[in-house]
Image (tube, rainbow, N blue to C red; front, side):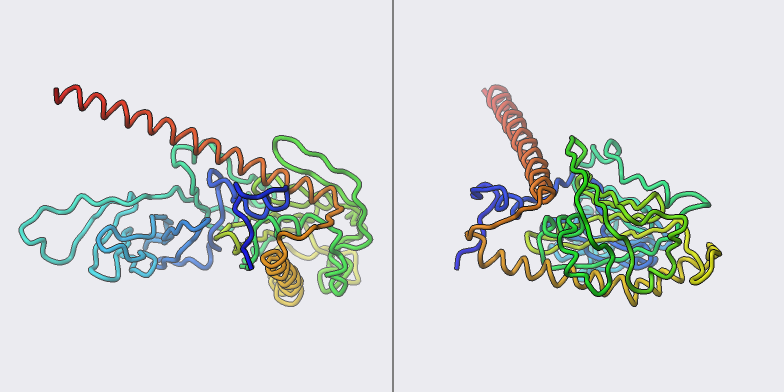
Length: 376
């Protein structure tokens, strides 16, 4: 059995979408903030690139290339000391800038080696740790997702969820935006009787609307105030590389995908709610009780519901690996638009990278020419 083709080898839109990466020149969530305590380090992987992410003893987060410059062991299995990350093997310590800061054994009469590894821009927002894997000089120019509902003293209730699925990121982004799979969720009914009413594409992304019955199953349905909220329609956006939904400006979510490799994706879901009602009454649930309720709902409903999506996309990935060269019959115009955007953005990234290599090659040739002239 042959494996699916690479992006450049792909012969049609679906093959290209399933081989495309995500442009690293965006901010990507890599961990839940609550799971990275002071003194802890973890590995984050973006499209095969490994980064050691750690929190120092003052609570600040840092990200370094996951490689000790000495023997190339992963720093993510090392130790956090102050604001430094120390390799587990010989104890060489790197500072947040990526410079070698300390060697705990003798130097044999030599000077401290001038070793350096790559640091990555890193931030915390919305209960998530974010890393910029692209060109560092672009980090301050590229906006992070702006979710005003999760900012300030009146921010909405939200308890982020992290999942890891053995599936390509395009399959996951299509899954959460395409409501033709409502049969999969017939137990939980997060949406039902869906009809696509709008499909728009622009430079920012793909935007769809559905007439659909939102949230009529499980525990969560008991807390939705349908007297205040129109739960008969939903808007969704694939605002590259992020995905979001909006129900009557009262119930929203964002999904940030972290593409680990061609067939593995980590996803961070931010479901957030403006208010809940006390079941059986018109009264609103006090703000301080909303997040405890969401934690319970996450455990007994949302996580199992997402588990259904996980089973489906992992099975889709397995099917794709086996049948990628077979004819397919995708009839959803939204899915075709999502795939076209994924391909377009990846092609643009590859074109920029090719142009950078040409410029770098030209500069190197000029430098060699000048060096040869000076030698003469």
